[in-house]
Image (cartoon, rainbow, N blue to C red):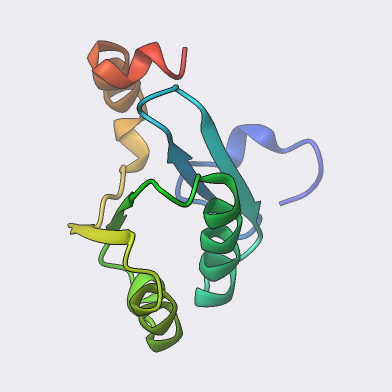
Length: 118
């Protein structure tokens, strides 16, 4: 794909994608994010360290993640084991098909999350 060929880029386009790690403080509505060019355990640990620095030490942190291997890497498990206030909750892998973009936006707009991410 050359420059200016935007109409050919789809949601499942592999080259040029980025990873967004995000966290929501449900008490305040604050959003913590980190974009990385890759989705490896090193980037996930970097996000966890950033999150640890942002969240007051007296609060527990509940992480809802998919079953991707990055989230279960031995170094991630070791890091989490040393921090009992971090709790992992695994979900099924969530992938939106190319044709599901409109459906996802409409579901999102009707959800409670829409008030945090207008």
